[in-house]
Amino acid sequence: MGNILTCIDQASIGVVERWGRFERLATPGFHFFNPFAGEWLAGVLSTRVCSLDVRIETKTKDNVFVQLLCSIQYRIIKENADDAFYELQNPQEQIQAYVFDVVRALVPRMTLDELFEQKGSIAEAVLEELEKVMREYGYSIEHILMVDIIPDASVREAMNEINAAQRLQLASVYKGEAEKVLQVKRAEADAETKYLGGVGVARQRQAITEGLRDNILNFSHMVEGTSAREVMDLIMITQYFDTIKELGNSSKNTTVFIPHGPGHVRDIGDQIRNGLMEAASSSVQ
Image (cartoon, rainbow, N blue to C red):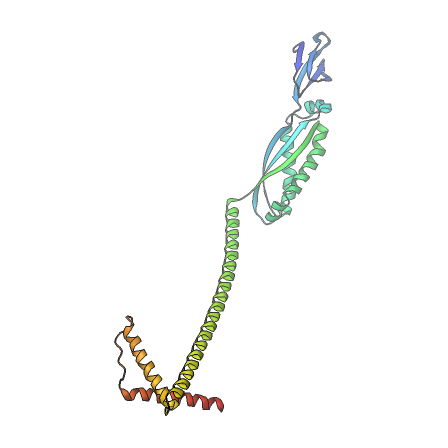
């Protein structure tokens, strides 16, 4: 018949029968059951939230086999604890069956990418169906979490390879753009260097020309009877010997054989003057 005096724990509820028929629910606390009146405690149910993990294997619209791990949090409705006690013998199997039914009806309509994007909608659909069915049996579905979506191992490997290839392609594009910018900047720097070098050479030659002109004019005024050509020859001789001196002082130069003699200086001067005259005449034409 059971115990006459019984204490129901907190977060629990007792089911009391009289002569084998449901009589009432016993709330947490101390209770007295009259065995002579046929009362006894038929069972105690926990009103805590319980968790059930369900693993479902199914196929997506693009023929990819996946495993979905769902976590269902449910609890007994206190007012309907008698339905939960008498109607269902194994509520976990009942919940699992409905989860299988809903998930396998929805997932085949989605591709793998859509499944990852819309897993929240699947959880909502399962919650709506379970809440409607299980409430009739005295159970309340609190939450449903789509914990994980696990594609087949070969599919995961292929997805990782595709992702890696896309990232490598993007890295190659960025690298190419960086090299392009570097080459453009290098070309701009080279052009600027050449331009500045040309400006420097032009200024150097202009300074040399102005210096030679001033020397020729000063020498012509200071020494009477000398022509500009004679002064130019003297300057060329001086520069000729300075050039030979520089070649001799430079340690990086090897032996250089050049024609040397008093007449060679005049020949060099004539060649320079002829070249300048030809350039001047061509620019006039």
